[in-house]
Amino acid sequence: MESSSHIYEMFKNRENFKDRLILEGIVVGVLIGLVVSALRFVLEKAGIYLLDVYRVLETKIYLLPIWLIFLVALGLFTNYILKLEPMISGSGIPQVEGTIIGYFKLNWLKIFIMKFVGTILMIGAGLSLGREGPCVQLGASLGQGVSRSLKRMRFEEKYLITCGAGAGLAAAFNAPLAGVIFSLEELHKNFSPIVLVSSMVSSLTATYITDTFLGLKTVFDIANMPIVPFSQYFYLLLLGVIIGFGGIIFNKSLLKSQDLYNKYVKIPQLKIFIPLLLSVIVGFFLPMVLGGGESLVDKISGADLGFVFVAILLISKFLFTIISYGSGVPGGIFMPLLAIGALIGNLYGITIIHAFNINSIYLKDFVVLAMAGYFAAIVRAPITGSLLVTEMTGSFSHLLALSTVSITAYIVSGFYGNEPIYESLLDRIIKSRVNVANVDESDDAAKILFEMPVAVGSFVDGKKLKDIEWPHSCLVVGIKRGGKEIIPKGNTKILAGDYIVLLGNEKDVVNIKNNIRKMTEI
Image (cartoon, rainbow, N blue to C red):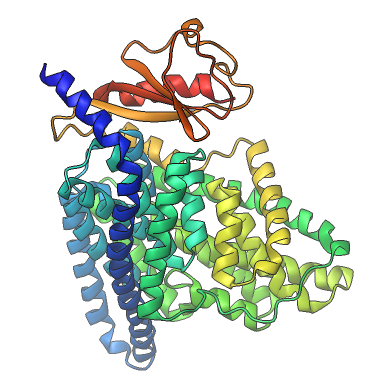
């Protein structure tokens, strides 16, 4: 009787949750906008102070021991918070994806506080890490916190987590459209009108808040970019191919670095000190490589630094990023990988300008286009990559060229079996934690509603409900077709574009989704 009452309440709440979700998405957007504004402000100041520190150390080398002691103290404290909450390690995006799928049970407040602090400490210390991944996890945590505070149902909480994650990315880069597409392409991996509307409201709100506090400006200051003529698109295709292979190398290197850390560093707490001590060497000889890489992109796009120096920057930035992220400290890879892509594009541009006598005014284009392609090859999300770089540079007139390089890099990367980096990292987290395959059962919600989209040509496309063998622990309770919701019967035919609404046991939702996805996708 109690179970029936709970299911009735679930259906009752579902009727008006779309309108409610918009309002809650605005609340999440405001909160994450304030948080990311504070994070970006602190990291910007920390980056300035960090460069000042190394300028002082160049003339007063006797102060170096004090700086080393300070870095060791940062490492010890970060180790402490990582021990308290291991799920704040890395970018946080794999953890968010795992939460949405149903793998992890997380303490949102604990993660929020420790991720915020850990990100400031590690990026502020100069490690080659980005703020965007942490912003995504911070946003997801706030979305979950709002849901728990309002005592929402589990299916609604997943949408609020997605809203917060997308808003976090939007606020991190002043890129609301990229935040929305990221929610669809990377987190949910399908088009959902509910996700689209709620994420857009949340992302726009978060971006408005950050722009209010930090100013209405693009992340990269790249002006006077000419439009690449169609006669030069062959060189863009070639760039996409090179970037595609570069993405394969990055993914394999990143995963290999984690293997090497686990194999040779027997005491896990010592991992963090390797990139911290390496940052001192980098700070003395190549301070441009420190941090995420925003200033690095601006410098290489605004000045001719020479082929050899750019090549040194590329190798150094690549290795420092791999070593920094592989150690497991809090911090993302979005910005570093964009910086690496920009360096590859700069080298490529210098090469073909001299080899084929191409006008040097297109050098900036190659820098920007390579960033989008590198993102697409590594994350395997070409639409997000194209929109993200477009919004970060503020130039929508280059969207066709960006898409060309991104799709080419995406195809090349996929042709050689390059898995999306966040899926690979998520698989590793799942395998390394014996007890994470349990979903969050912190409340009395034994049942959960969820939707699965039907792709054209999939196994269920055109079949009747009664002719399909559904997983035992779920029940088809509705079919959304356009703006209508159909009450399912045995003879109801499923069509491409439908959204199948299912009711299942929350503890089995991961397996249910995996089994149904095989039938609804191609």
